[in-house]
Length: 209
View 1 (cartoon, one colour):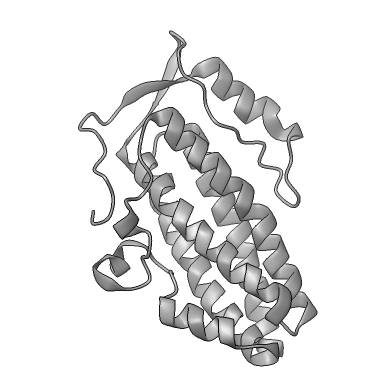
View 2 (cartoon, rainbow, N blue to C red):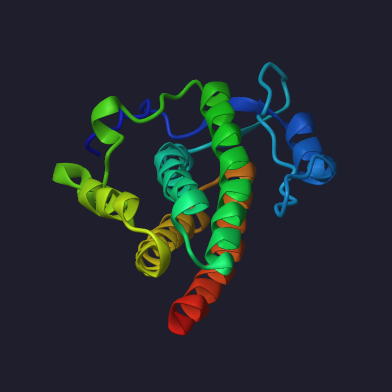
């Protein structure tokens, strides 16, 4: 895929300690983020008892990091430019969910010994890589969003974020079909659950404006 360092040939790799994985899945929920309840953490390596991940898991994490980063970037604009209180609340909720997930996914790639996207693949909103990451806003759209305020900003933000979330659902659905790593699949399911709900809410707010 353009802009992504190709994963190593072997599809399954032994890098996660099963005991640590179980603790992260079953006992980590106390480390809750606001509005999240994920409790997910970076896996540890070095145990003789291990689980594995495949290329779909790596691709999902590599692509979801910049996808989340753009959502946070868009949501940051709402602090000063949104006019509707519910839009501001939604933007704050998106940041509260996705910032910790970005940090977690970066830790996962480090543990998996896999790279992040190459610099040329970071801007998926236009150019040859556009089709690789569904829902990403273009730089032109982000510029227009940054120049809007009040109700025009609110409508543009909601329209772009709905499409952005729908792209995330597409990516998460693929992970749930073909991914094997329990933590990556857990995150994908969380994305489906939270962002499906947010799409419905954003559509409701957009209809009201």
